[in-house]
Amino acid sequence: MSDPLPSSLSHFHSLQNNWIASLLNTTLTTNDYTAIPTDSRNPKPSGEDHYFASTLATPSTIPHVLTLRRRALSTPPTEAPVWPAPTATPSSAPTVSPPDVILLVDLSAPGICGHPGTVHGGVVATLLDEAMSLAVATHSGGDSSTDNPRGKIYTAQLDVRYKRPLLVPTVAMVRAKVVARQGRKYWVRAQIVQEEKVDDPKQMHLEWPKRKVVTTDAMAFWLQTKSNL
Image (cartoon, rainbow, N blue to C red):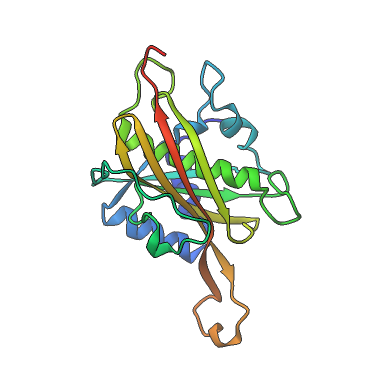
């Protein structure tokens, strides 16, 4: 399954979701972000990306994906960040805001479920990894010697903190940012955010009884190999 950009944009604009509508309006109309094709949703002649472009691109898995890239990217620091401890607070970890890349994913069921109504942890890690690869690609420049415009970039270490279940069906946001770079070495932080129903009666006065929560937090170390490897 390919990922035609106009179709992806139309789908997410058509959703009756105040949060997504507000996000698209804020990011696109202010020119902070631009919508780009999600490269990993396009099958490659070599067979690369088949998992995300085909296996996870069905009506019961992840039928729609939209990638937003920040227009004004900042140069990442060259000093390697302190790797967040399992109990690290957001203030003590490298920030993911503003993200280099925002990945909107329309999550369906039951094809990606572990427990009923809950996304399998391996799929959650895949979503983080995909967003991170796109963030790295915004800084690496890709590699014209391969059939993948992201170039030869690989995850060397991925540390995922599962804070709460990622529920389906839903639309979730994955935000990723390169927090440091040393040549072909990249450190990336990413989070998955979803809207959850609010059960507290004190919050039921909201326009719609939902809140945005970080379900998953991750840190990764990536490598870009030379084109002749």
